[in-house]
Length: 287
Image (cartoon, rainbow, N blue to C red; front, side, top):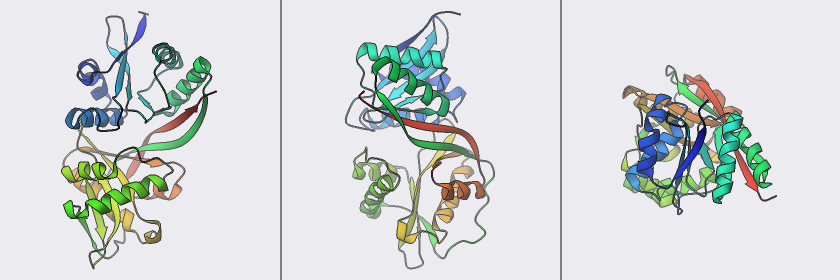
């Protein structure tokens, strides 16, 4: 086998020139890297945080790319699938250049392999903080019962509510607010990427967002209903609406769920979503 090496860069254009064909060869598994790279391309290098991003590709000498790294601090590294040897090589390369690694997000086995390699290389203590499942819409099955009300695409008048619900969603799912809430709301409003379910009197009670189409796919995210309003079918109704509109464009429709939430996993399967792969987040603390 030819020798392999991780090549790091701070330039998005250089990264995409090397990696875009590889990423598009398996767009479902690479959906997050594709959509984050597109956001950086269209909205600038600080679209996902106040620190500049870093990118990487793994290739055999003179051969094609076989894995990628994308990092938008302070979020975890995003990795495409790796075997343990390639994960160890990446850990060695990042440690060599002094790159700060707060955590890793990847397909489950890849994330675990890198966490082990990073601990061996640096002494950092890894902890699995989240488990997710990627789903793909097979055939939409709308809910048997739709609650009173209707779906409505959010507009500029909803900016403050969107920002507040973004913050509440992060708190509800145990995450951190990693983006300015108002900027997040603006990014969704810019492409009609937020839809409410509202009651007959016009009160928003649930939200389903979606990202812009990328590589022939649209990812639904986030889905949020305030705790006091749950149990009425609002989330199912608005998710079905957004999923149906996305599917009507001809795109593949994807979403991630938190595996610690069995209610949402059952809901999406009832709507016609089918599992693709499991992902995990590991966070690192100094050892």
